[in-house]
Image (cartoon, rainbow over all chains, first blue to last red):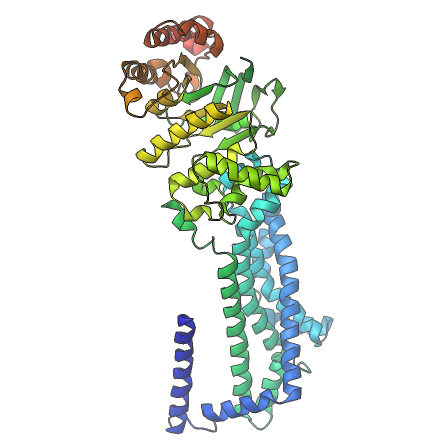
Length: 256
Length: 312
């Protein structure tokens, strides 16, 4: 709770600095609207049904994309992490695909899938699958052999040892991958909405604000909402991760 | 006394061809039911490999292991292992009680029974009431007690312990040694414990098998006929203990132990039961000497190894 209060102080300080610089004329207000104006627009937007539907569309696309990325990344990582031959065979392909930014694939996706919700979901899945995949591979590749031996020495067979020992052991690593992927997926969804000119969504709204006689307060309010959403998602995941995997970050204490 | 464990011609090598490393070569010995036997040998002599082969965690590349007559392939149901590194061996996401119950998951034991047996065995290792804690909330010695409890919960016929007290402080070590002897006597279990600590092997065991450097071969099989009731201070002071530990130390420094690598001669060890009966009346130190002399003689006569023959 104290770190939360500290974070909030920092955030308020930033808005205050923004307001002062604009009001004092350091930055021209037709270029950067003052924080108070953005805040007013922001509050107005929260009552705007169409805008809220756009936000819901964005978050829904994000949630589906993250779910699909987990559905692909975890089993694939499990397979690659436990079968070394498969991992070395796929390494070149993965290292080729991974650095390609999701936005660079927009033209390809627009041609093949179009610019509907499935397009942004596809690209967000593409962007988000990597951290999940890599963390899962790492978690299964790095599992302590003593831990698996301990499980097998109790009479567990391979499948039981995998389910009841390797998987819980890997869970915190995978969860960290999911947390990183969550932010990446949100960025990807909004970027695609913006660049591919989707019909609905937060990115679309920000784009409209920019095109529409330079409604910069609208652009900024949308951006602030995107930032807040990302922050809320990350905090929620960090919090639940700490609660779920209390043993993981206390592991070094065991060696006393 | 019936034979619990029968190891014959056990050989294990890592890798193949030129780069193969023979960790254990042609080991033969038996452990009788109810015995507490210690295997002592220099570090890196292949003790852990031996234990992993016996437990069925890795298939040996040669020879056979029989647990009360059944060939071991894969981990047998009535065998349990305690590893040296408790912090890597206990499951940190499970409570102490759940850790202890773990082996019962694979058996037809009801949930209530599992809970009851875990509580019982925790009490017998002196950990009543900590079931709800997590292993990482306990001290090292307590964590190793949890490991021992987990190994005992399925009432194994044979308990294997791999350097179980090497990671705890001296005081705790003594407590755990006494715990092991008490539990072994109470449950009548058979224990095979691997250690590099001479004093520990003599203090704990009914019988000490001395291993040579890698590839491991048995150079001596000593009967430890110290009184069953042992005490960390008085037992260790006793003349018998001192001469036995001297005997083991001398064996470990002898050329047959210190010889290196591939020139290793093969040493068939005699079964423990004969030696045990012979030694019962004789002075322990004397019988120890006799046993090792026997082993050395056997080595000289029976060694089919070319290099060993050319040496002698």
